[in-house]
Each structure stands twice: as structure tokens, then as C-alpha cells.
Image (cartoon, rainbow, N blue to C red; front, side, top):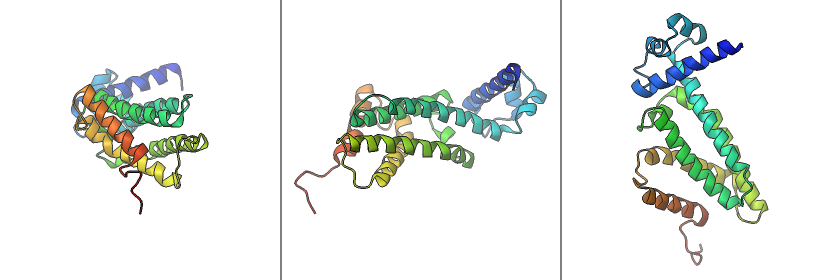
Length: 201
């Protein structure tokens, strides 16, 4: 792919992202994207078949950006418990930033279609692998005691997915202090559970 071709492709993708952000994927047409890109319909169709292909690429780019940020956290020289806290905080904030950047605090940009689920599937597996790596390192460091690491990894991953929309909508707090308090509650639940030490079965 030549530099010119690559640049044109990126212009078209960015135009699609901006139009999706403004109008939503369902209400966007290929003509809207062509106008926004100032490249014309013929050029647009030379690169992409339809808006579904473009929306998948836009979402994939956002997922890759988020994964790179989380991968950076996993590589930090931190104790595993601090690393997991940083990972969770980073994920929530980065996901909110991604949704906001793409124009909808309703969060449906990443949730409400089969196409989105398909794009996110590979990313979810990558994220699960990162979480598992942090937990394994925590076991080796003597910080974590996890009898079933696979189940624990999945619980953390799906808990984070379940928090995405409430966090983006501000349901976990609408001030920095309240958000921090709610995050700390989540971390306390993950690390300490809800039982007292004397509570045995």
C-alpha cells in the first residue's frame, strides 16, 4: 500500500468516525461519509464496501488503542495488586474516553450490534490474557491466593464489562471524589470480598 493510498484510507476512516459520532451508525449513509471526507463516493467505494465495514474498522481502531494502553500497564514494574488497580482504573477511564470521543454517552457505539460484538470478541480474549498474566504474577509474588485463576480472571473481566455503561453514564459518581470512592469500593470488593475473616462455612 502506497503512502498516498494509506493516507486516503485514514482520511476516509476518520471521516466515518466523525460522522458516526455525530449521527450514529444507523443513521449514517455512505454519502454522508463521502461528503465529510471530501473525497467523493467513487473514492470511498474503492476502499470500503459499506458503512458496516467502516464501523467495524473504527471500533477495531478504538479497541486496539485501548488494548495498547492496558498492555502498557501490564508491563509496568509494579507489585501485582497495584498493577491490577491501575489496570482497572485505566480501563474504565480509557473506555469512557473512547465512547465520548465517538460521540455517544449512551455507550451504544460499543454495545448494541452484532457487528460490534464480533469486533470486540478478539479484543476480549486479549484483555482476559492480560488480566490472567497479572494474577499469575501476583501468585508468584505471594500477593494473591487464587485457587481457580481461570474463573477469577473471567469474573474480573465480565465485572469490568458490566461496569462500562454505568460508569460512562455517570451512575458510579458524577464528581471526581465520588468516582474515586466508587472505584475504591470496587477494588475493595475484588481484593477483600465481603466476608469478615471470622466468617467460615
